[in-house]
Image 1: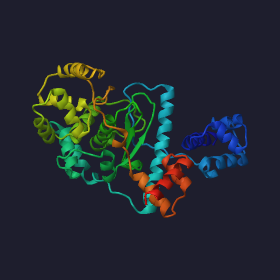
Image 2: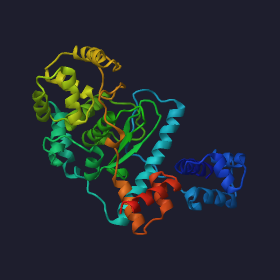
Image 3: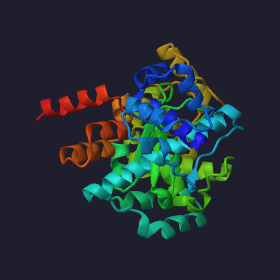
Length: 380
């Protein structure tokens, strides 16, 4: 029980964005007493004390005592071995995602607005693509066809996934080399979670979302929370799926040819902006097509530095998710999730949940939630 209470306190305090001292003051207890409860050192905290803490956090007593849901069908891999601190951060993140999915599904049920999974009836066909010569590319084309995208660029990747019945969550995590994860339908998904830490470019966030969709469609049997090491073949397949899902070859060829007379650097940046991808995705496509050799990586980095006076952090064989500066970048508003925010507003409008419950679901302080509600009224 102390461990369960401790985990809930850390989660709820983070949601409320309160320090230990602030919670202790609001509850009328010492910071040391609160700290010991949050760290699980108090074996049997008094109910009256817990009620005071719950009141300070603006939640019910049952929220402190509730057992956290556990995800089992998750793909959360790491290229490097995680430290003890990073493993703890991973576990806490999975608890956060489990509560988020629980809240999301509850809201959909309350409002009667569940969205069907657009790929549910086609998973066997999509998975069968792996047996072909270029299965990831074929699966990407089939996925676009199922979503009736044609050859048009994807303007809103989170919105597209949400319309297809995939839940999307953005969060900022400092776990090393963590860009995103996905949750299978069995655990309340399908869901894609994308790290939007400020040093991760928007292009990479978009690519990560497509990459995780690739895993959901191509590797459904690989969803196991206890598996933490990457399978390089599966990672390459998901990378390739993402590249062709975001930038189908016929459309790429059309846009590339239209800019035939432009300098190569400008041509690459022009095409990358159209498809909202990284410059590396464009260069990788040129190499895959045989239009250029591997020398293009070094040449492009040097030419960009000569023209713009900025280094791209060149790597000999950069992966689509490798760290670097992104030229001509997109901005934060180019990658935001909408659906959960919409569900929360509808539930508040209908009186199905309170404003404070909406704040908890969205991870906002009460003050921030009130400001948001005021902005809704101002826009009406």
